[in-house]
Length: 320
Ligand SMILES: Cc1cc2nc3c(=O)[nH]c(=O)nc-3n(C[C@H](O)[C@H](O)[C@H](O)COP(=O)(O)OP(=O)(O)OC[C@H]3O[C@@H](n4cnc5c(N)ncnc54)[C@H](O)[C@@H]3O)c2cc1C
Image 1: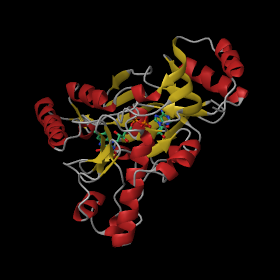
Image 2: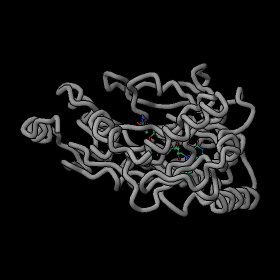
Image 3: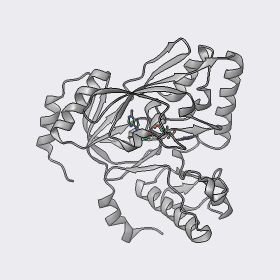
Image 4: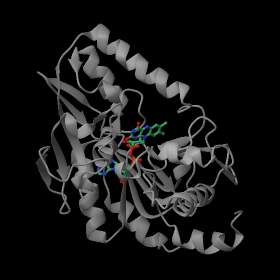
């Protein structure tokens, strides 16, 4: 393991914040796939000021930083994460301000949707029951049921690479299908402001129930997963799930990772999956589509942490 325990303890000694700070934190506790080895350092600040202080200090010390929201779109390596994981879920305030909803980055986006509907505000309900935080949803420009988060985004407050607070207005050309400017910079989202409109609480509640039931029927909550494995690509003429389905991949398995029986673009953890199983199954699906259809599918799920050492040992012992 490439880390210096003394340096880690020295850094921890200099961090003086409320919230949680631990070494060797198993990341399977913090990801919806329920896989992932230990993070050298795991920090969950409780306030924006503490987040800012931690970022500054870690940067000064040259410690690699990984920002984690709900862990709903990631596969953390079995070898874990070298450096520090900063978990944003301690920042969870949601405040109404007229037709605006101000949501801190670590609030669950589904909870924010529910709050907006309780206030009779329409626009955010399409994200009800989608796992993950507001920060993760903005970073991914999450999309479902025909809407993307940038459709309702007014502005985003973030800490830049110098840990200074900045504001980005949503009329930013770098938002696109599952793309946001945050993917191009070392920026940490602190708060998003959504522009909503008055709506009927009963209608919006019924709509949210419909989205939840749809996800339930597609098995989204049956087994640990991270939603769609591959992005859709208009050039391929059909959603990735349909392309994969035509190739009969449902039930395909590597170790404890299996293509869902209910949706060909979802991999599930049957209970014993390692992150490397998910990696190899993703690779297998990608290569199958490339060889059979000539389409180079782009993974939507992010493989994060220390993969190099894992792939060096598993490529020879791979079950496929
Ligand atoms: C059952 C299920 C269904 C899903 N359905 C959908 C769907 O319909 N549509 C869809 O788009 N996605 C879907 N997903 C994927 C996932 O819910 C979204 O991508 C979600 O937005 C991820 O949020 P998160 O907080 O978990 O992000 P994480 O997985 O924790 O992180 C994702 C990326 O965002 C970065 N990040 C997170 N927070 C911040 C921050 N505050 N500042 C800077 N960077 C940050 C991380 O560094 C990482 O690169 C689904 C997942 C599951 C498990």
